[in-house]
Length: 383
Image 1: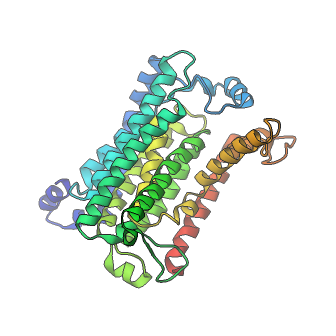
Image 2 (image 1 turned 60 degrees about the horizontal axis):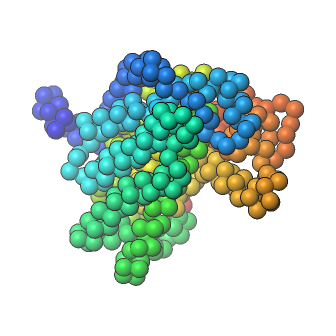
Image 3 (image 1 turned 90 degrees about the horizontal axis):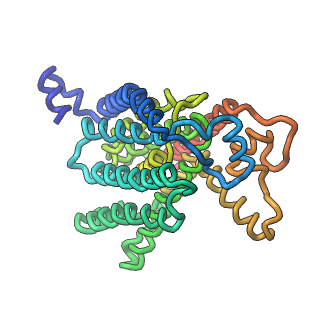
């Protein structure tokens, strides 16, 4: 409606183009986050909404958080980040597009789960938030609900491309789960659940240093927005031999809003951070990032586009299970996720005399994120 009103006011069709609305969505979300961030942070500070406990079970990280004062930094900044993101999407995206509607539902749902987790940590003395099982139940209810609607819609409208996986590097190779009947659909939903929930948790784990998660999200979502825009254009997909998903193009506008909101949040989250996003911000960011890959059929490229998040997630999982199977006596990495090991000990596997400064770690991880994003975009032509 807004683009139509502006088009009629200025007598141009410029505002109907996805590229224009993507840029305007980014600018709008940035301004929303920039101007709402200050008042929200002051309100959170006045109500002592602070990161009293570290994200990690490591005693060393807990001691470092207390030593550096990070355990007293305001948290739940994801509240104004997500509000800015959704506000911009509602203004600039086409709300009759099912992918956009489900993106809004997914973002709001995961933000609600993250908010409950943050709220319990901050209001109940000695509480570490939701239990792991309760958290996964909450995430699963939201994600499976969204995926179920997508599967139903794809079947009703004969959109089999939405229920197909397209491996990168291979021409004319596709895995159509619908051909396997209900078993295939169940396998598809399970795989997509793993993609969305896994990415949401990966961003949550990476949210451990000033500017790390927000900066890497901006870089990754830039690449995913290009994937969505290209996938939504029949001429470009025909040339690049990619699946054409008509609804995917509009997700580039959502990607623009996500980039702008993260930029506005990064204004306050850059070192030294005035606010952390908390689970209420990291979970919906990761889930929405994965949803963009699902809609553009780039699920198998996502690990490369989101390489930093995958590295952090895998390092945490490997550390946990290596410690468990070694009889709780050995750890593979100096610290997990590995950005903490580089910061505290200057090495991933061995401790060195001096660790990297936090800003050095963050900027170098931004570079790694950019390399992964560029490599993923290179696969467009390789196919």
